[in-house]
Amino acid sequence: MLTIHTPTNIALQENEVYVRSEADNFQDEWPVHTHNGYEIHYFIQGDATFLIGDRIYKPLPGDMFIFRGGVPHRINPSREMVYKRSFVNFTELLLLDMLAVSQLENLMSIFRHPNGLLVHWPPEEREYITAIFKGIKEEMGAGNTGYKTMVKLSLTQLLLRIYRKTTSEQSANPILCSSQKQTSVSRVLHYLNQNYTENVSLDELSKTLHLNKYYICHSFKETTGYTISNYVIRKRVAEAKKLLLSTDAPILSISETLGFNTPVYFSRAFKQYVGVSPQLFRKSELLNEAKIH
View 1 (cartoon, one colour):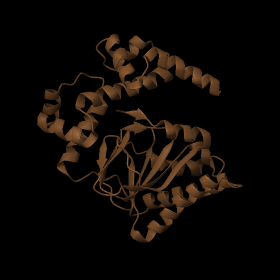
View 2 (cartoon, one colour):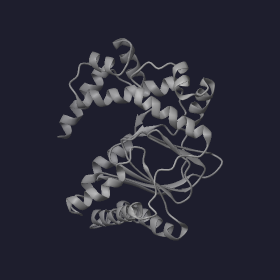
View 3 (tube, one colour):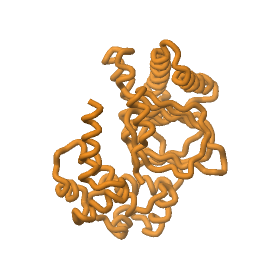
View 4 (cartoon, one colour):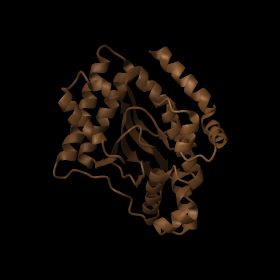
């Protein structure tokens, strides 16, 4: 299910930053999700695949993923090996008083890649990267005088390191997994993300991508955790939530725009995955925004 990661959004709303250092907890589910702000995810240890947008990565120790929180993403770690990572989520507002506007724009350009940016830190640089995440975590936890300034300084240093690395001669580009299965699933994801408002049949998908339909179903479910049809419905619902909050479009119009056959089907699907009807969702969220402001 494509979900919004509420704890991250709450933390960003309260502190403009959310950080974990060398976390190794394991969850029962790792859903495809989005959240506000930006994310820097540092992979330390484990055996996993990482879905960002419509690309799938096979991370190695020392890999760092840089992407916008609004890009759907999901880590899929194996239980056979401890999955350890550090990450920081933050809003651009956090750094507005640290840098000139032009400097900040340059640094934030590393988040423009629609499917994330991957950079690899060699062993001799990993101690420094680990120390930055640890320092931010300790400052946020202690809350001593000037802690927010210390967090901003550390985060700015990290962004500068990444920016220098990506603009050097050895700058890293997003790297696709080499396995045939993961490459095939990436192609399916890209197609679905571009055509989710259309009623694409499995036969049509198979013909368009020149892939066996049974292979598509099995590989997609194994890699993403969802069936093709469930992924499409969840994608439509996620887009519906955005349209309900960002536009005044009638619910009927939103339903038709996103490819739902009938308003009744749209309302039923929305309530199944969000918990409330589209009407109540729009009303309650707008009321919450009004209270905040």
